[in-house]
Length: 74
Image (cartoon, rainbow, N blue to C red; front, side):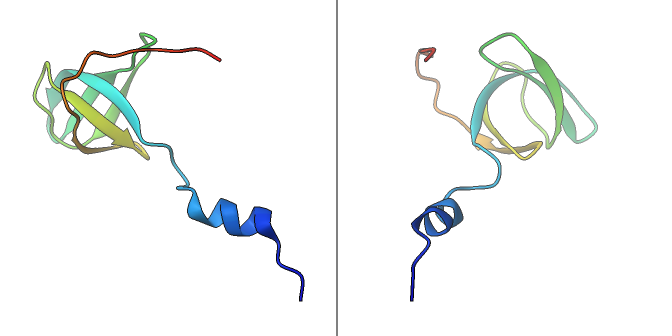
């Protein structure tokens, strides 16, 4: 029986990437976040303005550590 390694590897990857953003506004159970490139979007979940958070699938996925951000383009 042949094993499709691509399919097995793809099953290990999450459907939505885990991104890092800063909360710039918050209201009524949703927050506006700003990504390192400067783009902004509204996500569900309450966040404190000025904190760095993880965003996944349009939702706040938790607080991210306040480490220096390094952006490396490939």
